Image 1 (cartoon, rainbow, N blue to C red):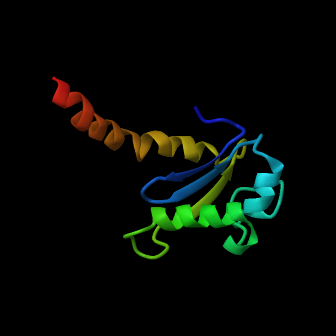
Image 2: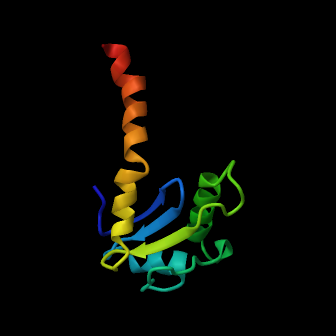
Length: 112
């Protein structure tokens, strides 16, 4: 389940998305965006600004390992915005099918 109280990082293969739930903790949003009210396309706070920002920057760097530098754009999408549905579309379109096929071949097929 995707909770409106959460903030999620999604590696969609072609882009990285930070989805901000409408009920995410204001202190957390300030720590990673520098504001309680980030908008679509918001910039991340510098890694040096807080522990949370540093961890988010580290997760993004890990997701980009082995890829061309900054090959995937980072998009910030806020729940309720016009473009926020893009996050949910990426859950199904970009990652779901390969995930299920991999899960099937590694866990289900050996039991058959």
